[in-house]
Length: 169
Image (tube, rainbow, N blue to C red; front, side):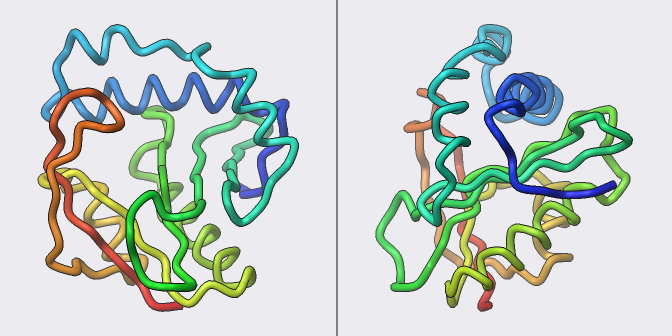
C-alpha cells in the first residue's frame, strides 16, 4: 500500500469512502436516519477544486492498494482556537474492506510527517468518545488525550461527544 497527495481525480473515491466508513463506524454514535442520508456525491465539485490547490490550509492524502483508493486523511487549519504552529487532522476514513490492516495508522503517520515537513510544531484531532478503534490508532501513532472534551453538532447537526488528542512534532 502507498500513500500520496490526493488529486481532483480522487474526489469521487473520497466521497464514497467517507460514506461507507461513516455508515460502518458511526452507527453507535449518529442516528441511523442521518447516516442513511449521506450522499457520496455531495460537494464533489468543491472537493475537486480544493484538491487542485493543496495548501497547509487543506491537504488530502489517499492510500492506495494495487490502484484502488482505500482510505484518506485530511489535514488543515484548525477549526477552533489552539496554539500557534498547530495543524488539525480533520479526517481519517478507511474503506471498511480495508479495516484492521494498518492503513489508518499508515495514513496518520503520513499526515504527521507531512505536517512536520510543513513546519508545524503540533498536530491535533477530535475523536468521538468511545470510538475505540480510532482512539487506539491515534495512541499507536503517538497522540495523547489532552483532557479537553466538547459536545459538537457542527459537522453532522447531531451532538457528538469528542475528545481532543495532540502530538508534538
